[in-house]
Image (cartoon, rainbow, N blue to C red; front, side, top):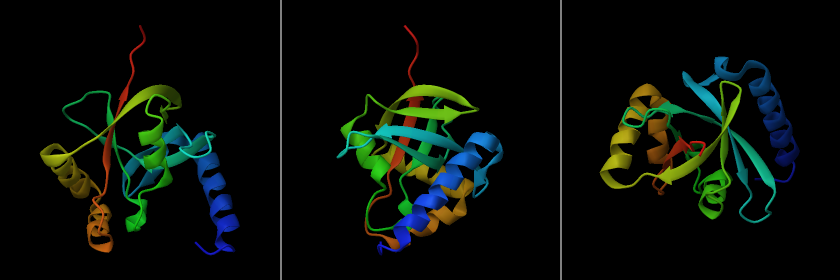
Length: 147
């Protein structure tokens, strides 16, 4: 990303996070509700926040699926690397409630089936398969239960 665009992106993301705090579930991407993902940076160790679309996971009540599309870019979004490096330090905010979650990257037939459901719900995600050579990650976020 060109250096001059970074401050604009940072300001835009700040506005997105503010809107999410104010409006929560009424905000949508491609018709899908959002969640805020809190991770720990893979390189920095600092807290990071991302806003992503969430999709129901019919076989796992209470869990949500998120997509590491990165807009079809050549690399996975940073939050995907954060999940992989620090899987025990992941939280999601849904309905203004924070839940510690267990992330699980889907593979094979399970991933393909989930991807088809996601693309049926939000067709614009389907074009990302044609703009990148990488396999778009689909991650299940399952809330941890209290002991």
